[in-house]
Image (cartoon, rainbow, N blue to C red; front, top):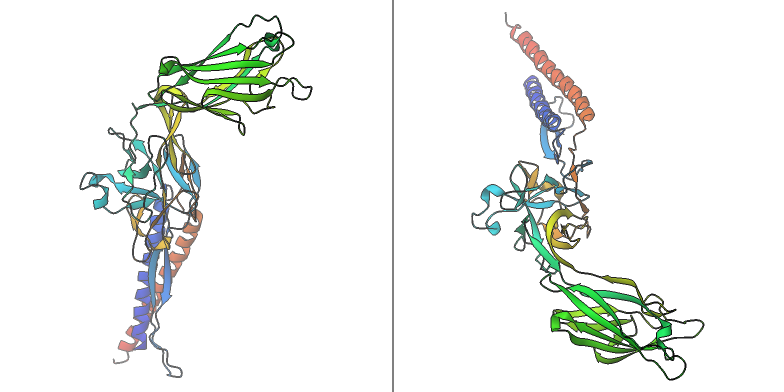
Length: 436
């Protein structure tokens, strides 16, 4: 009966608007929830009679379908904690629930993902949120390199563990030697005294070692030789000679005082392309740069002064962990009190073909579903993914003003549907009153 279909359509309208009201109330309630993705209700009409010229019409009503707009991104809000993380752009952080930690390992539980989290270390050094979400990452080797891990499974992921009491050393592998030798020492009648220089470097175990370098001038019978013999000894090798070289300096007007040639007597060879010596000390190779021929920034021979002008090196002694930060590429960098910075983990970003098809879970987390498609682990900033932002959280995507406006229209629509039901009731009453 047509009048009965009107009643059913009115009831369907009440249900649909009640559903929409539920999404609005949820959105407003989570307007301050970090990482919250707003829910939306869409109305779809239902058609019962579609015959043309039938002379009557039956109301089909309306049906509400809800979905969560996961692809929307909230504003990035700055914080004071280095391990408050957010994703600027596409991609999510991989996490697992801590309540299931230890029950067969990571592989026994599905991976979840979130766009933001306030991570802190627990008593065991595991990075987790207050709600119990454990951050996952790829561990780095001792040298800071990230090995190759599978991208379509979580088999290579591990909980990020940061030991606050850890120490680390950084061995010296590169050194730059800038020294000025006195030009007067290679002239006739000079004393020929050897000039000593000690340069500290750090071994593989964080120990302090020394390269003892001597410069001996060649004093000619007449004129100036502009020639020196450089001998390098390693304290870690019982002061054994690791390199001996004959240095000849230019005395022309255009390049006066710069290296003219370097002749290897023993030890590592001289590379004329970059002006480096390949030394081998007790702990391994060290590249010492003394300058190319004609380079004024390396070894020079000018005036009558012996002076180190610029001696730089990498490496550091053993230091204690002082800070941990995450860069835009998802690398977790540990800083030590000696100034040494080492990469310890990489946090990949998870992406799926259909982000809105993910299954929403508690605590602003999501899980893959048949609709979302399989996940893939990207390096942050590669492919479609954005960057990782430290000292930040992602805000809620709720627009309170828009939700309040929708609340008004929903209330009016609900009242109108209730009025339809009231009108149908009155018409049915009139129909009943026909037989009196």
